[in-house]
Length: 203
Image 1: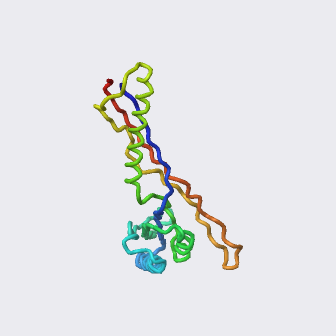
Image 2 (image 1 turned 120 degrees about the horizontal axis):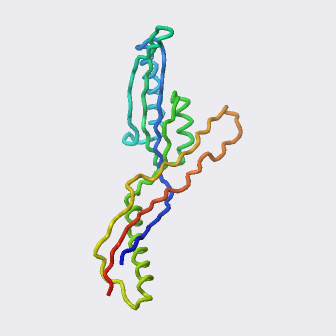
Image 3 (image 1 turned 30 degrees about the vertical axis):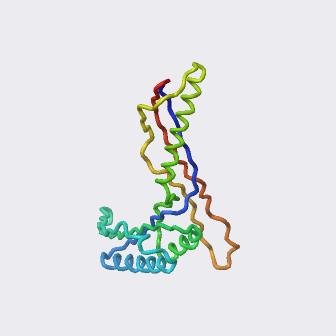
């Protein structure tokens, strides 16, 4: 008998990955780079002040590109630096996001909530998928007066992918005297799904 089984788990994320960029434009390459470097320096100092371990943030991209305006016949320059940060304490999210922008970050490219125990959860989902397949096989053959024997073929039909990132809106405080802060996260859950096909011998 050939049956399909599905194992599904929903788990709460326990960390967030943030990709934050400083982008500076101007007419002088040296000045643009200097301004961009100064903002990044302030951002990195702030990240360290937030007690984010050194291993949990890194420079992902650095570029300085000329951009020629054919109408004005002038060349301007665009400097970009991107920092990727992994935050393992979600209670720091609000303060970190607001501080990043205050220190010069002008583009948030990605905010994804993840599980640090993804491999463990996937293993549990695989076991659930096999159990589901066996239960289905037993349901089918029980009316025939037979029993499910050994499995001789198991195929993993799961798509290889990372759980879809879940996004959170970034709230900016208008002033220090603004109304008390509200909750800004709706983290939700990551859904992990494993699909298998199993062929059993019938006894």
